[in-house]
Length: 264
Image (cartoon, rainbow, N blue to C red; front, side, top):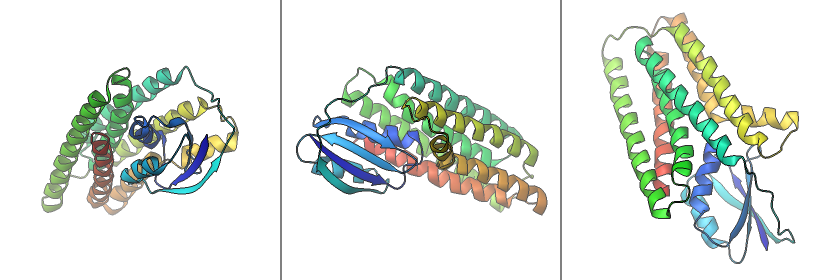
């Protein structure tokens, strides 16, 4: 048995972990995957050569690179029987906040909230692809991944067009208080999702949990929307909201491209 350690620089939260799991699941030589999200490390236990493993990781464009490979005597690994229930929990949380942020974003005229709702939807897709295709074929999972990726890109492009329309027109100011309140609760939801998934791996140290929560790219986005809301109110301009919307739409498209790569 060999143990190869990768650094995954863009692995910010469990949704990226799930993407990597789905990408590598068809490689029969892999015995186990051990993810360390706070330190952005992935340890792969495998038999034989690891060139295909490295190639698949690089294809996801998550900044993956091999650090080391060594022999190991470890042959048994701890499995978590509750993993499926935990994935359903975070899926429902993410999808619920997609609906909440999309609805409040439209009502409050905030593109930041609309964009962040699509980021929540992207995470829902990642968890959903794994759960809906459990027990199914690789072909079925890839088909679902392609549909999810194209749907996500379509929504992001429509969002871009709306941002351009608002930049060129005289759109009303978004409701900054709604932006702050909803983004604050979305931030809490992301923290809860990370806590739930990482707790399943028995990493109980308090400092590790804090690190897992605050290294999440999703939470940085939530904070960005809150800052944009403060600037909207201070500057009496909708430009900060439109700018954060553009940034998040770009991130959503990048996530959709990664999902599409699972469908190859």
